[in-house]
Length: 218
Ligand code: C5P
Image (cartoon, protein in one colour):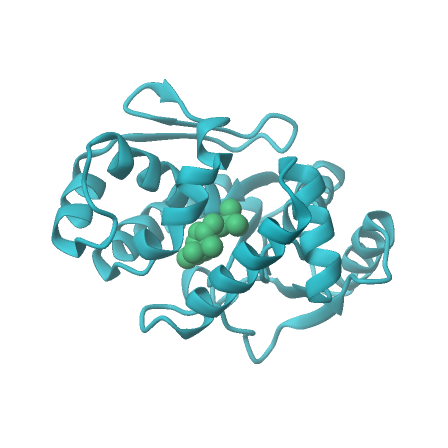
């Protein structure tokens, strides 16, 4: 059980979180949800009454907030300034504002630095996000890019977050477009990433495929 970094990128609803957590548990690795970090900063921005579009003010909040991150795949956890925000960061207010906050270069710089520290300390870790294989951990042992049809992704997110399907589909389309076209570290498929379409695949099938890939590499 030596050093092993797995980067899992892809759009919302592609199955990243479930797959990443399960894989991490099975290979006895830590698990980092970088989306939760962007969401926690967004929570702090909203709490402080700052306009998410005001990049300078957003950067200031991000620089002052203290994040505590738990990387156990069974019980991932995040606190902001000592407040557990695991539930709040999944709410509609944070979800609506997170793309704007995560497009701020100063926010990304801060979080990417922190993510690299967590990865270095863990040694053995599955990291999920949008820019892990391309920016955060370009030297990862395995890079995975998960996709699924827009319908399948909206279905999954709608069930997971208990939100109306049409609202979810519209929100996903908006965030995907924003996340893929922003200037700073857009959602991209790293050239050396293994692409898996999970539309017709069960979670366990995906995890099994990833373990087979890993066995050949580490
Ligand atoms: O994965 P999740 O849907 O929780 O991510 C929330 C948002 O955080 C994404 O829509 C994206 O704007 C941002 N994000 C990012 N880079 C990452 C992870 C998430 O910009 N590595």
